[in-house]
Image (tube, rainbow, N blue to C red; front, side, top):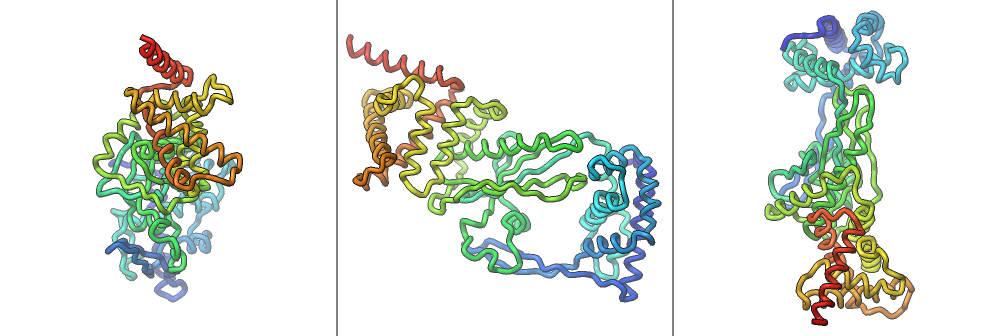
Length: 445
Protein backbone atom coordinates (compact mmCIF):
# COMPACT_ATOMS: atom_id res chain seq x y z
CA UNK A 1 0.00 0.00 0.00
CA UNK A 2 1.52 3.39 -0.99
CA UNK A 3 2.33 5.83 1.81
CA UNK A 4 -0.04 8.80 1.72
CA UNK A 5 1.37 10.94 4.55
CA UNK A 6 5.08 10.77 3.72
CA UNK A 7 6.37 13.21 6.40
CA UNK A 8 4.65 11.19 9.13
CA UNK A 9 6.06 7.91 7.83
CA UNK A 10 9.62 9.26 7.73
CA UNK A 11 9.39 10.90 11.15
CA UNK A 12 7.99 7.82 12.90
CA UNK A 13 10.42 5.43 11.21
CA UNK A 14 13.40 7.59 12.21
CA UNK A 15 12.08 7.94 15.76
CA UNK A 16 11.56 4.19 16.18
CA UNK A 17 14.99 3.29 14.79
CA UNK A 18 16.68 5.74 17.20
CA UNK A 19 14.55 4.59 20.14
CA UNK A 20 15.35 0.92 19.63
CA UNK A 21 19.06 1.65 19.14
CA UNK A 22 19.18 3.72 22.34
CA UNK A 23 17.42 1.08 24.41
CA UNK A 24 19.48 -1.77 22.95
CA UNK A 25 22.72 0.01 23.86
CA UNK A 26 21.57 0.67 27.42
CA UNK A 27 20.34 -2.87 27.95
CA UNK A 28 23.66 -4.23 26.64
CA UNK A 29 25.57 -1.87 28.97
CA UNK A 30 23.47 -2.97 31.94
CA UNK A 31 21.92 0.49 32.38
CA UNK A 32 18.42 -0.84 31.64
CA UNK A 33 16.88 -4.24 32.28
CA UNK A 34 13.91 -5.84 30.62
CA UNK A 35 11.05 -5.99 33.13
CA UNK A 36 9.06 -9.18 33.54
CA UNK A 37 5.32 -9.39 33.99
CA UNK A 38 3.39 -12.12 35.75
CA UNK A 39 0.12 -12.90 33.93
CA UNK A 40 -2.67 -15.37 34.61
CA UNK A 41 -3.45 -18.17 32.19
CA UNK A 42 -6.62 -20.28 32.22
CA UNK A 43 -7.89 -23.28 30.33
CA UNK A 44 -11.20 -25.12 30.48
CA UNK A 45 -10.78 -28.86 30.14
CA UNK A 46 -12.14 -32.09 31.60
CA UNK A 47 -15.09 -30.19 33.09
CA UNK A 48 -12.84 -27.95 35.16
CA UNK A 49 -10.96 -24.65 35.11
CA UNK A 50 -7.18 -24.83 35.11
CA UNK A 51 -5.42 -21.74 36.45
CA UNK A 52 -1.71 -21.09 35.95
CA UNK A 53 0.71 -18.17 35.68
CA UNK A 54 3.26 -17.21 33.08
CA UNK A 55 6.19 -14.83 33.19
CA UNK A 56 6.65 -12.75 30.04
CA UNK A 57 9.20 -10.10 29.06
CA UNK A 58 7.54 -6.70 28.97
CA UNK A 59 9.27 -4.97 26.05
CA UNK A 60 6.45 -2.45 25.71
CA UNK A 61 6.84 -1.49 29.36
CA UNK A 62 10.60 -1.07 28.91
CA UNK A 63 10.19 1.14 25.86
CA UNK A 64 7.48 3.16 27.59
CA UNK A 65 9.87 3.85 30.48
CA UNK A 66 12.60 4.88 28.07
CA UNK A 67 10.20 7.28 26.39
CA UNK A 68 9.49 8.92 29.72
CA UNK A 69 13.10 9.08 30.87
CA UNK A 70 14.88 9.96 27.63
CA UNK A 71 12.67 12.52 25.92
CA UNK A 72 15.56 14.94 25.50
CA UNK A 73 17.91 12.44 23.89
CA UNK A 74 15.14 11.33 21.55
CA UNK A 75 14.43 14.97 20.56
CA UNK A 76 10.71 14.66 21.25
CA UNK A 77 10.30 18.47 21.12
CA UNK A 78 11.67 18.46 17.58
CA UNK A 79 9.50 15.46 16.65
CA UNK A 80 6.40 17.23 17.97
CA UNK A 81 7.19 20.34 15.93
CA UNK A 82 7.53 18.19 12.82
CA UNK A 83 4.27 16.36 13.38
CA UNK A 84 1.88 19.14 14.46
CA UNK A 85 2.10 20.77 11.00
CA UNK A 86 0.50 17.63 9.54
CA UNK A 87 -3.25 18.44 9.69
CA UNK A 88 -4.40 14.87 10.32
CA UNK A 89 -1.87 14.42 13.13
CA UNK A 90 -2.65 17.81 14.68
CA UNK A 91 -6.36 16.97 14.80
CA UNK A 92 -5.57 13.55 16.28
CA UNK A 93 -3.39 14.97 19.06
CA UNK A 94 -5.90 17.70 19.91
CA UNK A 95 -8.57 15.07 20.54
CA UNK A 96 -6.27 13.39 23.05
CA UNK A 97 -5.43 16.73 24.71
CA UNK A 98 -9.07 17.80 25.01
CA UNK A 99 -8.67 20.52 22.36
CA UNK A 100 -5.56 22.10 23.87
CA UNK A 101 -2.32 22.72 22.02
CA UNK A 102 -0.49 19.37 21.74
CA UNK A 103 2.42 18.83 24.12
CA UNK A 104 5.27 16.32 24.32
CA UNK A 105 3.38 14.40 27.00
CA UNK A 106 0.34 14.32 24.74
CA UNK A 107 2.53 13.09 21.85
CA UNK A 108 4.07 10.38 23.99
CA UNK A 109 0.78 9.04 25.42
CA UNK A 110 -1.56 9.40 22.43
CA UNK A 111 0.80 8.42 19.60
CA UNK A 112 4.24 7.07 20.47
CA UNK A 113 3.28 4.54 23.13
CA UNK A 114 0.50 3.05 20.92
CA UNK A 115 2.95 2.91 17.99
CA UNK A 116 5.43 0.93 20.11
CA UNK A 117 2.70 -1.41 21.41
CA UNK A 118 1.39 -2.09 17.90
CA UNK A 119 4.94 -2.53 16.54
CA UNK A 120 5.73 -5.25 19.08
CA UNK A 121 2.37 -6.95 18.51
CA UNK A 122 3.21 -7.17 14.80
CA UNK A 123 6.74 -8.51 15.44
CA UNK A 124 7.46 -12.18 15.87
CA UNK A 125 8.10 -13.03 19.52
CA UNK A 126 11.61 -11.53 19.80
CA UNK A 127 14.64 -13.17 21.29
CA UNK A 128 16.34 -10.91 23.80
CA UNK A 129 19.32 -10.16 21.53
CA UNK A 130 16.99 -9.30 18.61
CA UNK A 131 14.30 -7.40 20.49
CA UNK A 132 15.81 -4.01 19.62
CA UNK A 133 16.64 -4.65 15.96
CA UNK A 134 14.37 -2.63 13.69
CA UNK A 135 11.73 -4.89 12.07
CA UNK A 136 10.72 -3.14 8.85
CA UNK A 137 7.78 -5.46 8.11
CA UNK A 138 6.31 -4.89 11.57
CA UNK A 139 6.72 -1.11 11.21
CA UNK A 140 5.05 -1.15 7.79
CA UNK A 141 1.99 -2.94 9.15
CA UNK A 142 1.91 -0.59 12.12
CA UNK A 143 2.14 2.52 9.97
CA UNK A 144 -0.47 1.38 7.44
CA UNK A 145 -2.93 0.78 10.27
CA UNK A 146 -2.24 4.21 11.80
CA UNK A 147 -2.51 6.03 8.49
CA UNK A 148 -5.81 4.36 7.67
CA UNK A 149 -7.17 5.53 11.02
CA UNK A 150 -5.91 9.10 10.64
CA UNK A 151 -7.53 9.46 7.22
CA UNK A 152 -10.88 8.15 8.47
CA UNK A 153 -13.72 10.08 10.09
CA UNK A 154 -15.02 7.59 12.67
CA UNK A 155 -14.00 6.10 15.97
CA UNK A 156 -14.96 2.49 16.56
CA UNK A 157 -15.49 0.95 19.98
CA UNK A 158 -15.92 -2.73 20.66
CA UNK A 159 -18.43 -3.40 23.45
CA UNK A 160 -18.07 -6.83 25.04
CA UNK A 161 -20.19 -8.24 27.88
CA UNK A 162 -19.18 -11.57 29.43
CA UNK A 163 -22.29 -13.75 29.70
CA UNK A 164 -23.16 -15.43 32.98
CA UNK A 165 -25.24 -18.62 33.29
CA UNK A 166 -24.80 -19.31 29.58
CA UNK A 167 -23.51 -22.20 27.51
CA UNK A 168 -23.51 -22.88 23.78
CA UNK A 169 -21.98 -25.40 21.42
CA UNK A 170 -19.37 -24.61 18.81
CA UNK A 171 -19.52 -21.62 16.51
CA UNK A 172 -21.20 -18.29 17.13
CA UNK A 173 -24.55 -16.57 16.68
CA UNK A 174 -24.86 -13.28 14.80
CA UNK A 175 -27.90 -11.05 15.32
CA UNK A 176 -27.54 -7.98 13.12
CA UNK A 177 -24.41 -6.23 14.37
CA UNK A 178 -24.31 -8.30 17.58
CA UNK A 179 -22.29 -11.50 17.94
CA UNK A 180 -22.51 -14.12 20.68
CA UNK A 181 -19.41 -16.29 20.81
CA UNK A 182 -16.89 -18.11 22.96
CA UNK A 183 -14.21 -15.94 24.56
CA UNK A 184 -10.62 -16.91 23.91
CA UNK A 185 -8.46 -17.72 26.93
CA UNK A 186 -6.87 -14.25 27.04
CA UNK A 187 -10.33 -12.64 27.01
CA UNK A 188 -11.50 -14.96 29.80
CA UNK A 189 -8.62 -13.71 31.93
CA UNK A 190 -9.06 -10.05 31.04
CA UNK A 191 -12.84 -9.71 31.04
CA UNK A 192 -13.35 -11.78 34.19
CA UNK A 193 -10.56 -9.87 35.96
CA UNK A 194 -8.63 -13.04 36.80
CA UNK A 195 -5.33 -12.30 38.55
CA UNK A 196 -2.18 -14.42 38.78
CA UNK A 197 -3.11 -15.10 42.41
CA UNK A 198 -5.46 -18.11 42.32
CA UNK A 199 -7.52 -16.56 45.10
CA UNK A 200 -9.02 -14.18 42.52
CA UNK A 201 -11.18 -17.07 41.23
CA UNK A 202 -11.98 -18.88 44.46
CA UNK A 203 -15.72 -19.32 44.86
CA UNK A 204 -16.44 -18.10 41.32
CA UNK A 205 -16.22 -21.33 39.31
CA UNK A 206 -18.03 -22.46 37.33
CA UNK A 207 -20.85 -19.92 37.00
CA UNK A 208 -18.98 -16.79 38.04
CA UNK A 209 -16.37 -17.25 35.27
CA UNK A 210 -17.85 -16.28 31.92
CA UNK A 211 -16.65 -18.37 28.97
CA UNK A 212 -18.90 -16.70 26.40
CA UNK A 213 -19.60 -13.10 25.53
CA UNK A 214 -21.92 -10.85 23.56
CA UNK A 215 -20.28 -8.07 21.56
CA UNK A 216 -21.07 -5.30 19.12
CA UNK A 217 -19.25 -2.40 17.47
CA UNK A 218 -20.23 1.20 18.09
CA UNK A 219 -19.31 3.63 15.31
CA UNK A 220 -19.03 7.27 16.40
CA UNK A 221 -17.95 10.51 14.74
CA UNK A 222 -14.23 11.04 15.28
CA UNK A 223 -13.51 12.35 18.77
CA UNK A 224 -16.89 11.46 20.30
CA UNK A 225 -18.67 8.54 21.94
CA UNK A 226 -22.21 9.38 20.88
CA UNK A 227 -22.88 5.93 19.40
CA UNK A 228 -21.81 3.93 22.45
CA UNK A 229 -25.18 4.08 24.25
CA UNK A 230 -26.89 2.58 21.19
CA UNK A 231 -24.37 -0.26 21.40
CA UNK A 232 -25.37 -0.89 25.01
CA UNK A 233 -28.99 -1.10 23.88
CA UNK A 234 -28.17 -3.69 21.22
CA UNK A 235 -26.42 -5.90 23.77
CA UNK A 236 -29.46 -5.81 26.07
CA UNK A 237 -31.91 -6.54 23.27
CA UNK A 238 -29.88 -9.50 22.01
CA UNK A 239 -29.95 -11.10 25.46
CA UNK A 240 -33.69 -10.44 25.73
CA UNK A 241 -34.19 -12.25 22.42
CA UNK A 242 -32.44 -15.31 23.84
CA UNK A 243 -34.65 -15.19 26.94
CA UNK A 244 -37.82 -14.89 24.89
CA UNK A 245 -36.86 -17.98 22.90
CA UNK A 246 -36.49 -20.29 25.91
CA UNK A 247 -36.15 -20.41 29.69
CA UNK A 248 -32.83 -19.59 31.35
CA UNK A 249 -31.22 -17.04 33.65
CA UNK A 250 -28.69 -15.67 31.15
CA UNK A 251 -27.40 -12.23 32.10
CA UNK A 252 -24.35 -9.99 32.13
CA UNK A 253 -22.90 -7.49 34.55
CA UNK A 254 -19.80 -5.79 33.16
CA UNK A 255 -19.71 -4.24 29.71
CA UNK A 256 -16.15 -3.58 28.55
CA UNK A 257 -15.69 -0.61 26.23
CA UNK A 258 -12.62 -1.26 24.12
CA UNK A 259 -11.59 1.65 21.87
CA UNK A 260 -9.93 1.25 18.50
CA UNK A 261 -6.22 0.66 19.13
CA UNK A 262 -5.40 4.09 17.63
CA UNK A 263 -8.12 5.98 19.44
CA UNK A 264 -6.64 8.94 21.36
CA UNK A 265 -9.04 8.23 24.21
CA UNK A 266 -7.81 6.19 27.20
CA UNK A 267 -7.84 2.40 27.01
CA UNK A 268 -10.27 -0.08 28.48
CA UNK A 269 -13.29 1.23 30.32
CA UNK A 270 -15.92 -0.80 32.10
CA UNK A 271 -19.58 -0.11 32.82
CA UNK A 272 -21.16 -2.34 35.43
CA UNK A 273 -24.80 -3.34 35.78
CA UNK A 274 -26.01 -4.42 39.19
CA UNK A 275 -27.23 -7.99 38.71
CA UNK A 276 -27.46 -11.06 40.87
CA UNK A 277 -26.55 -14.06 38.72
CA UNK A 278 -28.83 -17.02 39.30
CA UNK A 279 -26.60 -20.04 39.77
CA UNK A 280 -29.46 -22.52 39.33
CA UNK A 281 -30.92 -21.93 35.87
CA UNK A 282 -28.24 -22.11 33.18
CA UNK A 283 -29.27 -21.06 29.68
CA UNK A 284 -28.04 -23.72 27.25
CA UNK A 285 -28.39 -22.57 23.66
CA UNK A 286 -28.72 -25.45 21.20
CA UNK A 287 -28.52 -25.35 17.43
CA UNK A 288 -32.29 -25.86 17.14
CA UNK A 289 -32.90 -22.68 19.18
CA UNK A 290 -31.18 -20.45 16.66
CA UNK A 291 -34.02 -20.06 14.08
CA UNK A 292 -36.43 -18.94 16.81
CA UNK A 293 -33.91 -16.49 18.25
CA UNK A 294 -33.23 -15.06 14.78
CA UNK A 295 -36.96 -14.60 14.12
CA UNK A 296 -37.39 -12.71 17.37
CA UNK A 297 -34.35 -10.54 16.65
CA UNK A 298 -35.60 -9.64 13.16
CA UNK A 299 -38.92 -8.60 14.74
CA UNK A 300 -37.38 -6.33 17.41
CA UNK A 301 -34.43 -4.97 15.42
CA UNK A 302 -36.41 -2.10 13.95
CA UNK A 303 -37.62 -1.01 17.40
CA UNK A 304 -34.32 -1.06 19.30
CA UNK A 305 -33.80 2.71 19.03
CA UNK A 306 -37.40 3.62 19.89
CA UNK A 307 -39.29 0.69 21.42
CA UNK A 308 -42.97 0.92 22.43
CA UNK A 309 -43.14 2.04 26.09
CA UNK A 310 -45.44 -0.79 27.15
CA UNK A 311 -42.98 -3.30 25.68
CA UNK A 312 -40.19 -1.86 27.79
CA UNK A 313 -42.10 -2.12 31.07
CA UNK A 314 -43.12 -5.69 30.35
CA UNK A 315 -39.70 -6.75 28.99
CA UNK A 316 -37.87 -5.12 31.88
CA UNK A 317 -39.95 -6.97 34.45
CA UNK A 318 -39.67 -10.18 32.47
CA UNK A 319 -35.88 -9.81 32.42
CA UNK A 320 -35.88 -9.24 36.19
CA UNK A 321 -38.18 -12.20 36.82
CA UNK A 322 -35.80 -14.65 35.15
CA UNK A 323 -33.04 -13.73 37.61
CA UNK A 324 -35.02 -13.78 40.84
CA UNK A 325 -33.93 -16.16 43.57
CA UNK A 326 -37.15 -15.79 45.60
CA UNK A 327 -40.37 -17.07 43.97
CA UNK A 328 -42.35 -14.24 45.58
CA UNK A 329 -40.28 -11.65 43.69
CA UNK A 330 -40.60 -13.58 40.44
CA UNK A 331 -44.38 -13.71 40.84
CA UNK A 332 -44.65 -9.97 41.45
CA UNK A 333 -42.43 -9.15 38.47
CA UNK A 334 -44.46 -11.29 36.08
CA UNK A 335 -47.72 -9.68 37.12
CA UNK A 336 -46.33 -6.17 36.70
CA UNK A 337 -45.25 -7.22 33.23
CA UNK A 338 -48.66 -8.68 32.39
CA UNK A 339 -50.47 -5.61 33.67
CA UNK A 340 -48.27 -3.47 31.39
CA UNK A 341 -49.54 -5.54 28.45
CA UNK A 342 -53.20 -6.09 29.29
CA UNK A 343 -54.13 -3.62 32.03
CA UNK A 344 -55.39 -0.73 29.91
CA UNK A 345 -58.90 0.33 30.97
CA UNK A 346 -59.23 -2.25 33.77
CA UNK A 347 -60.42 -1.06 37.18
CA UNK A 348 -58.54 -2.08 40.32
CA UNK A 349 -61.32 -4.38 41.48
CA UNK A 350 -61.38 -6.23 38.14
CA UNK A 351 -57.67 -6.83 37.67
CA UNK A 352 -57.60 -10.48 38.69
CA UNK A 353 -60.40 -11.60 36.39
CA UNK A 354 -59.82 -9.24 33.43
CA UNK A 355 -56.06 -9.71 33.20
CA UNK A 356 -56.45 -13.48 33.38
CA UNK A 357 -59.20 -13.46 30.77
CA UNK A 358 -57.29 -11.21 28.39
CA UNK A 359 -54.13 -13.28 28.77
CA UNK A 360 -56.02 -16.48 28.00
CA UNK A 361 -57.61 -15.05 24.85
CA UNK A 362 -54.31 -13.62 23.63
CA UNK A 363 -52.46 -16.92 23.99
CA UNK A 364 -55.04 -19.56 23.10
CA UNK A 365 -57.78 -20.16 20.52
CA UNK A 366 -59.31 -23.32 21.96
CA UNK A 367 -61.95 -22.80 24.67
CA UNK A 368 -60.55 -25.54 26.89
CA UNK A 369 -57.00 -24.17 26.66
CA UNK A 370 -58.26 -20.68 27.40
CA UNK A 371 -59.99 -21.90 30.54
CA UNK A 372 -56.83 -23.62 31.77
CA UNK A 373 -54.74 -20.47 31.26
CA UNK A 374 -57.40 -18.26 32.85
CA UNK A 375 -57.78 -20.49 35.92
CA UNK A 376 -54.03 -20.79 36.39
CA UNK A 377 -53.55 -17.02 36.08
CA UNK A 378 -56.38 -16.31 38.54
CA UNK A 379 -54.80 -18.66 41.08
CA UNK A 380 -51.46 -16.94 40.56
CA UNK A 381 -52.98 -13.47 40.98
CA UNK A 382 -54.63 -14.56 44.20
CA UNK A 383 -51.27 -15.83 45.43
CA UNK A 384 -49.69 -12.55 44.40
CA UNK A 385 -52.22 -10.73 46.58
CA UNK A 386 -51.30 -12.91 49.54
CA UNK A 387 -47.62 -12.12 48.98
CA UNK A 388 -47.91 -8.34 48.64
CA UNK A 389 -50.34 -8.04 51.56
CA UNK A 390 -48.17 -10.10 53.86
CA UNK A 391 -50.54 -12.96 54.53
CA UNK A 392 -48.89 -15.55 56.74
CA UNK A 393 -50.62 -18.59 55.27
CA UNK A 394 -49.54 -19.43 51.74
CA UNK A 395 -49.75 -22.59 49.69
CA UNK A 396 -46.12 -23.74 49.58
CA UNK A 397 -46.68 -25.99 46.57
CA UNK A 398 -48.32 -23.22 44.56
CA UNK A 399 -45.59 -20.77 45.57
CA UNK A 400 -42.97 -23.13 44.15
CA UNK A 401 -44.85 -23.74 40.88
CA UNK A 402 -46.98 -20.75 39.91
CA UNK A 403 -44.19 -18.14 39.55
CA UNK A 404 -42.48 -20.31 36.94
CA UNK A 405 -45.79 -20.92 35.17
CA UNK A 406 -46.45 -17.18 35.04
CA UNK A 407 -42.95 -16.47 33.74
CA UNK A 408 -43.66 -18.92 30.91
CA UNK A 409 -47.01 -17.24 30.12
CA UNK A 410 -45.44 -13.78 30.15
CA UNK A 411 -42.70 -15.05 27.82
CA UNK A 412 -45.33 -16.38 25.40
CA UNK A 413 -47.32 -13.14 25.53
CA UNK A 414 -44.24 -11.03 24.82
CA UNK A 415 -43.26 -13.32 21.94
CA UNK A 416 -46.72 -12.94 20.44
CA UNK A 417 -46.48 -9.15 20.67
CA UNK A 418 -43.02 -9.04 19.14
CA UNK A 419 -43.50 -11.60 16.37
CA UNK A 420 -46.87 -10.17 15.34
CA UNK A 421 -45.64 -6.58 15.37
CA UNK A 422 -48.12 -5.35 18.00
CA UNK A 423 -46.57 -2.02 18.98
CA UNK A 424 -49.57 -0.34 20.61
CA UNK A 425 -51.14 -1.31 23.92
CA UNK A 426 -54.46 -0.02 22.61
CA UNK A 427 -54.16 -2.28 19.55
CA UNK A 428 -53.32 -5.26 21.76
CA UNK A 429 -56.26 -4.74 24.11
CA UNK A 430 -58.69 -4.09 21.23
CA UNK A 431 -57.67 -7.35 19.57
CA UNK A 432 -58.16 -9.31 22.78
CA UNK A 433 -61.49 -7.66 23.60
CA UNK A 434 -62.76 -8.48 20.11
CA UNK A 435 -61.91 -12.14 20.77
CA UNK A 436 -63.71 -12.09 24.12
CA UNK A 437 -66.82 -10.49 22.64
CA UNK A 438 -66.79 -12.92 19.70
CA UNK A 439 -66.66 -15.93 22.02
CA UNK A 440 -69.50 -14.53 24.13
CA UNK A 441 -71.62 -13.99 21.00
CA UNK A 442 -71.04 -17.57 19.87
CA UNK A 443 -72.23 -18.85 23.22
CA UNK A 444 -75.46 -16.87 22.92
CA UNK A 445 -76.10 -18.34 19.48
